[in-house]
Length: 85
Image (cartoon, rainbow, N blue to C red):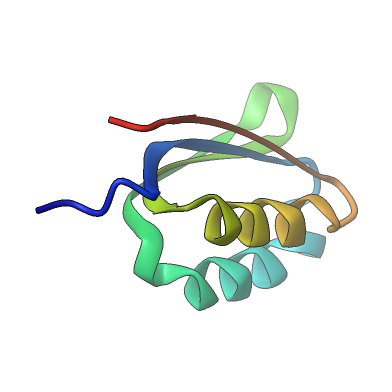
């Protein structure tokens, strides 16, 4: 039986300065690897940004820790959408 306290969802990450933030972003993602189901990263050269989309499955505390740490990085924007399903 699946644990209903966990949420499944999507986290979007926009990195404005890849050279300055990529290493820190990857370290944070590695620390939270147990809740990441899938990851897609795309550099978008016309705007000079990099975009990462994560599919996640974790508790609200775990997701909050991930998004909070990412959101505290300079030049990084984070949004999440979660569901109980």
